[in-house]
Length: 298
Image 1 (cartoon, rainbow, N blue to C red):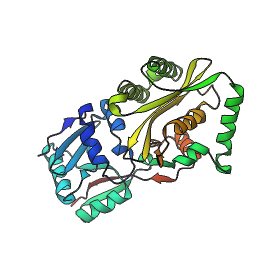
Image 2: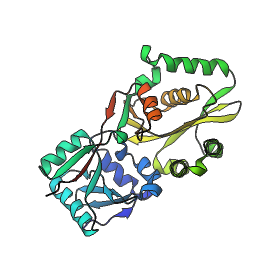
Image 3: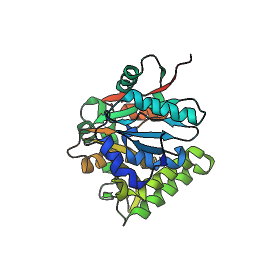
């Protein structure tokens, strides 16, 4: 029997030990991301034997790929048994193509897999986002040049610390009022996730940066590590009216905090066309496709 508990800050060391050995630079291996969104998805975890099991409970129970080494067939059986105990269909999400191959090899023909393009992660090479090289990044460089020229001597970048945290949250509150978060459950849930990140930065091993123009925060971002060489961008917000602030905070943060890293995961687009175009415009090295798995009907 799997004895799940709600994900909590004290689980981070154990989670990191498993995720550092797991394949794939995916958001499902980002403790900060799972923790921040736990109020929305009711994320739980369980250590049993050589595996760490994860599942979400909202809007219904869904399992993630277990992390660990050992008999994967037995681990999958454990999860199926847990679903049966709860009298719910067995469902797993967030599987990469390599995970699909492993699951199929462990229990051949038992599952039906379905691609979920809206859950795909966007993976970038650090040097591309740091230097914005070549014709493909011409528009990004133009926006940054425009920002630097328009706000010359008036802007600055800062790491997020306890001393400026309230300024960041004030900007998030302003962004929410401007974008009518009160009428959007999704934006309200996102705001809760941002609060979970901002007010637990040290405990999560997360870090952030902000832009100011004339002393006022106009953009901020927060990231955390996936494994040893990949930064997960957990959140990025900017004032659209300050032209160039999005590419500016993106580049400034990468230059400040990504030295020695290889990749940046800017997470999924949730099926939103505008967000998809924005993520593709940064020329990802890979769009990491994800799949759902369900038991094949007899």
